[in-house]
Image (cartoon, rainbow, N blue to C red):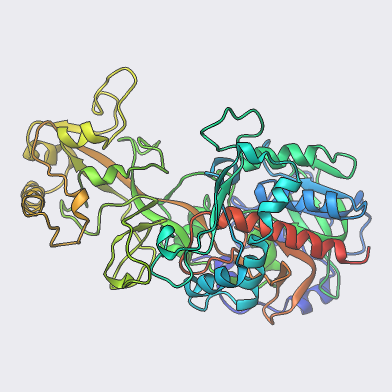
Length: 548
């Protein structure tokens, strides 16, 4: 474990003393000193970046938003429409938004009963997120539907599920909990019953909406955050940002951090989640830069061990690409079994990002099975399970016909495409998989016996997923642990402020979205998109309220 990760997890060093002594908050240099320069934002090769509080400013704006996903664009749009002329700079590390936002389904939860939604959220949180933060989120979920319409979203082109009033009407992710029915979903541009002529995704909608306010919002791509500038009192004054010639940019009212998670930092994934080999579904540039910078400023951290994962997803034999879409229904894994490198089943292997039966409202969750964004029932609870770096999905001709791997457009078989091994016997397949022949043959025999009797006596998979592996040819598809996003990051208050280790707001510093997400235990699908919208707006309004 590196010293940087120890800093994030353990007690903070005396940041206040360091700032008073040095008058500088140069996170990039600190990260390099701890040996993580390869993952950190890079300063120009020509020399040091001046991040001192008394340096001169190259530019100034009222608000600087870092990260141009859903959260960042929601924040910028809020500044533009509710800031009474306040100016905003929106910067993006990549040449285009490169976190999870452009790749997500785009569903957001919303409610007409924020008190009931807050009650449900508190049960999901299990004490990992303060009540006032969850209440602020629930209140925001009662406002975002009307807000996107006010901002110009086409209601006719939206996919809309009204919040339920009957508990049995909604199949929430954790339907077993009280008030789990008290919300609905909306997705911009996803109405399959009409021809969508406008934006077909919430990210696209927000980008177009922000572009209409170019008089007050300047949007720059290929502009990574290098550092934050902090004065002796601890207040954040601005940013150092830019790819080749970083600029010192003053943020008169605040900086809003919307940098997402650390999905593409294998070191952080291993240190906090024990899953350095896990494969994220998106977020190519979510490498934890902002986490390191905020750690240097003395920010407290939460939810670093929480993630929307893991499940063992199908990959090609070289482990370079998904052979099934990462978010896919019905779950392909219901058409066979998954075994480890020892040839044995090792978990409830009907898994995907979100697959479950509809269980009765407020029934006993400890007896149920499924995969809820990778969280699976284990010992009566639903943690995210650490998964091995490699496993095999084994199925037969019948499983293939039902959808274990989507059919190729040219009719090629999975083995011809390099998607799976194929063999006419289980023994031959085991040899290609390099697993013990006797173990795999015994596992397949046990599974087929379960299918014949209609009960998975080992891991209690639903009867609808008991598809035997008995008809050649037999296939083995490589699997790797997969996930959507991490949740951990700087602690966030109900106002969107980032807090230090003493629980005090760091003046001028805010966050939104998955950068220090509110989800610290169980997660409800659609909750991250809603969080990006809700806290993008909350943090923007908090920043704008500051005196310039």
